[in-house]
Image (cartoon, helix red, strand yellow):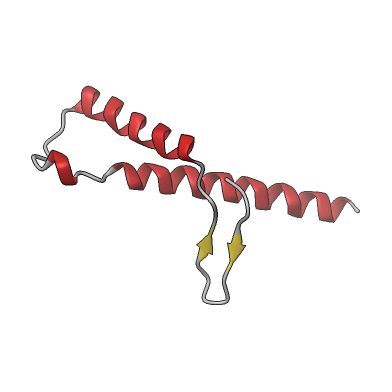
Amino acid sequence: MTNSQVHPQGWISLSIAPEHEARAKQIRTERDRQYGNIYTEATTDERWVGDLGEMAFNSWFKQGSSQKTENKAR
């Protein structure tokens, strides 16, 4: 997940690779298998988007943290 941009309003936009979307869907499927899926509208079930959001935020946060550390070392 690269090409991040923090906007003046405080929100973050970044590019998401298709393989990350596929991984988020896989995570959701694994959780449903483990805990059960109580969501009966399978065709409109997009709970995996939350998993994708967590992955994207964690990636962005780690990238930003390492850049701040590198800048302080200079």
